[in-house]
Amino acid sequence: MNVDFLVFVLISVFYIMVQDKVMVLNYLGRFGEYYQAVWGWIRDAMSRVIRDEEDWEGAWTTHTLIMLNVAAFAYAVAVGYEAILSDFAFVPALASETWRWITHQFLHAQIPVELAPFFSAHLLMNMLFLYVFGDNVEKWLERFKLIKLGTELNIYAGLYLIFGVIAAAAQATVIGWGSYVLMVGASGAISGVLGMYLVLFPQNKVVVAGRETLPSSIYLMLWFVSQFAVSDATVATVAHIAGFIAGVVVAFILSKVWEADKIEN
Image (cartoon, rainbow, N blue to C red; front, side, top):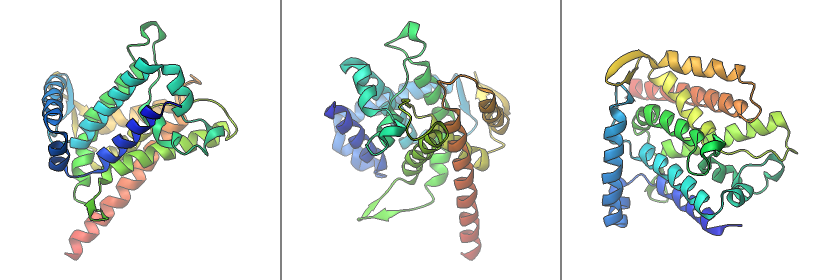
């Protein structure tokens, strides 16, 4: 097993669960400055291509998740993609190897194979969806506070990872817990974020090349319905559907909790 990759993922999970951006950047020092500069350049470029109408510059966790997923893919390619896949992809028959529930969320398939190993459409599309829709969900969830061991934990990051676990469990239940089919990708986790976005921001429009297009709810529902038509056995459609439904349910519950709390206060 490549212990370095496992350590990378564990540190990444701890990193995104820490809500205090200032503390993290101070700890990172000059690297933190480089990180912010690189992400600022990426965000400026992407916002000219596609975003939603409430593009939020302060989406610390969303931006960090994107960078970590890209870094994980690059690392896996550099040290031996197949070996990393074997040790860290989610495999239903090996579900007792608990790290796989989390590590598979930071791995992505090398497709199309003609462009492997240095390109992944799987990674590109997942990060694009997370970039467009993740920031508003992150911002909305900041109204909820969770303090454990004297530290404010990142609810958005926690839900993201939980959605990924739910998605993997759903896919494994359908294909069978004895299966040795490998599952990789942040799709299940991101599907949960999309489900939350649908409930919380159904009227927000997607902006493409500076022009407002249709409300996001139309795009998201088309994407959700399209999952039932996918016939490619290599696509974990059940994971996508389960993650999305989980996100819808969580957003509905939290929105009701927030409304009730506002009425009481």
